[in-house]
Structure formats: C-alpha cells, structure tokens
Amino acid sequence: MKGEDQPLVISNVALEGKPVDIVINDGIIEAIHPHNPQLSIPHSLIIDASGKAAFPTFANLHTHAAMTLLRGYGNDVPLQSWLNDWIWPKEKLLTDEHIYWGVRLACLEMLRSGTTAFADMYFFLPAAARAVHDSGLRALLGDSVFGDAEAMADAASYKVPDWQDDRVRYAVAPHAIYSVSETGLRRVAHYCKANNLLCHIHMSETAEEVANCLRQHGCRPYEYLERIGVLEQLDHRIIGAHSLHLSPEEMRLMARYGVVAVHNPNSNLKLGSGHQFQYKELRQAGVRVALGTDGCASNNNLDMLEAAKTMSLLQKGWRNDPTVMPAAETLQVASRNGFEALGINAGEVAVGRLADLMLVDLNHWAMVPDTDTRANLLYAAHSDAIDTVICNGRILMRNRQVAGEAEVIAAVRRIAKELQVTQ
Ligand SMILES: [Zn+2]
Image (cartoon, rainbow, N blue to C red):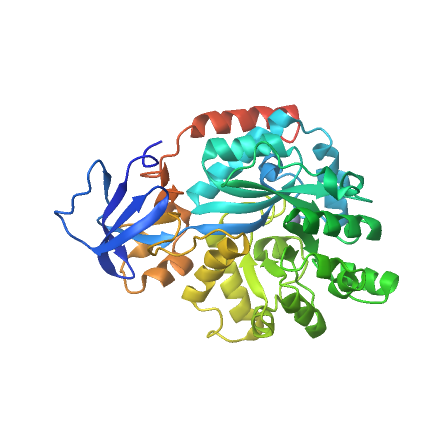
C-alpha cells in the first residue's frame, strides 16, 4: 500500500469549499495550505484531487462485523424468533476461518462507505484482528461475554493480546443486562477497571428489556448498573449500544459516569425496537452520542452514510421539527463523536489530527450542483460518491478500487454455502 512511509500530498482538494493541499506524514495531517500548483514536498506521493472534497471518515460505534456472513438471512421476523430460530443456530457453526472472511467483507463494505474505525462485539477475536489488520482499518474488538463471565473472575489474569497495536484494540463486551448475571457484570466491571479496558454493552434496546428490568430489579437498566456498582467502576469506560428507551434520571446517570450512547437507527427500525432516540435530551444532559449500524443480520448493511441520514430524518420526523439534527451536526455525530469515544484523534480534517479522511467525487450526480457540499453528501449521496479513503495515512481505496475485493467476495460466497444460508 502506498502512502504509509512516504509523505502524501492531496493536491487541490476542496475543504470547507476552499481549494487546499493537505500534507500527510507518518499517519498525521501535518499541514494544510491554500492550493499551490507548485507545492513540492521531497519524496512525496501526490494525489490530484481536483473535483473532489475532503471529509473526515466515519466511526461506526456498534457493529458485529462477522455477521456479514448472515446478511439477508432471517428477515421480517420477530426478534426472539430471529435469534432463536435463525441467527443463534448458525452462529454455533462458525469457525476462525469464517470469522476472518466475514470481517474482511465487513471491512471492505466499511471502506467503500467511508468508515475507518469501528467498535465490534463478537467472538474469535484473533481471527477478526487479522482481518482488520489485513484490511488496514482501526477497530475496538469487544470480547463477547455471557452468564457469570467466568473468564473475568480473576482480573489479574488479563494479558494484552498479541494482536493488539495502535490500530486494533481489545475491549470487553458483556452482551446485555438480561444475558449476563449480576455476578458477571460485577466481574466485567472490576476486570475493565483493573486493566484499563473499555466495556461495550447492549443497553435499553427494547421496551420489553426495560419492563423486565423493572419487574426483576425494581429499577430501570442504567439504574440497575449503578445500584450494583458497575457504573462507578466503569466510569468513562462504557459504550452503551442502543440506549433507546431511557428516563431523564438514566440520562443524568449516563452523563455522570461518561457513558457513550450509540444510536443504531436502521437496526432499531428494522427490528421494530423503537424510533424515538432522545438525541436532544441526551445532549442537554451532557451525554456523548455516537452512531452505529449494528450487525448485517439486522440492518442489513454497514453504511454509516445511510445510518446518518436515517438518524437525521428520524429526529426531524418524530419531533415534527425540520430544524433539529442539521447536516453538519449529524456528520459530526457519525465521525468525530465516535472517534473521540474510542480515544482516537481523528474525525476532523485538521492539522495535528490522524490522517483518516475520504475524498468525495464532486462530479457525482448527487453532488451537483454544489450548493451545500455537506447537505449533498448527507441527504442526496450514497456511498458510491466516495472515491478515495485514507486511514492512518494509508490509501485503502482509490478511484473506488479496493485491493483484494474479488477474493473476499468469493470466500464469503463459499462460506455462505457451507453454512447453508444460501443455496
Ligand atoms: Zn448489536
């Protein structure tokens, strides 16, 4: 791959409507100059980006990447039947090799739709890590935990995985408060605190989950986590996927303990989980909100541009207010908020930030006329308007070409046949 060891110059690209040259060195945006056709940086690779606009890439804060293998399997059925009769029986069959290719397909799709970092929750982490490495993206790989979390009983037993580096990191992912016991949740919290790990958990996804929590524990899900001491231990270390059905008191708790609320609008809509994500209330309470796609079995894609548009339209729709969730703010939720939640210094095309950015083709029909580039990208374009994607200073897609695409697609087709999810 080009661009990692030599300086990269993105020449004559539109940034906030102005033509500039972006200089990338050692994975960092080193300088941004007004465009100068004579600009010369020794030994650099120059990309002519005239007719393109630069945007920060997206951070997908909740997904199950390998579930690309089950894309389109089990549609339009109730949640419990979907899990029991469709998804879980197939997940029992998965192997390291399946996971590797499923995650490769996920990374391919994420690259094509402008995502360079994701927070995952699944199994077979070493195979997933290899796939992320080979694809060139960043990921926080959450180790799925159920029941009593036996493996986390001894916090001192944690060893930094040999696959971890500055792009791919380990996290703990207790599935949810209804599938992990109180003992398990306490163990996870202690384990994460002792080893300075992030914790990624499904929270308050359905009204039924909240009703069950009220019946069993006499309080709502985030109140339950506080009562058993988990929020305190996981202070500023918790990613709460969905966080859809919340009370004002829970939002105050989330703000106090630095919980990141991750909205997954397409998954929530398709599974009929609810559509009134309380973005404004969460922001007013001081909670950081990020965006995710959830896995491909429920969405059925990993397209953050589509998720961002859905989020914006849903907020305007259920509040009957077109002024909420304007384009710039929505794109920031999909990008910078997610990177910040992961502790990654990206999400903005600015000097000193990590070089995670994409070039959007201003000659694509959806970007014409160029009256408002951001609004065109969010409301008119699909991901095929994204031409080039750079992660950590490396060019991973250029002219919509991604290395190894045919091999990934062939492998996943073969595996889907083996799993009998296709004919
Ligand atoms: Zn999920």
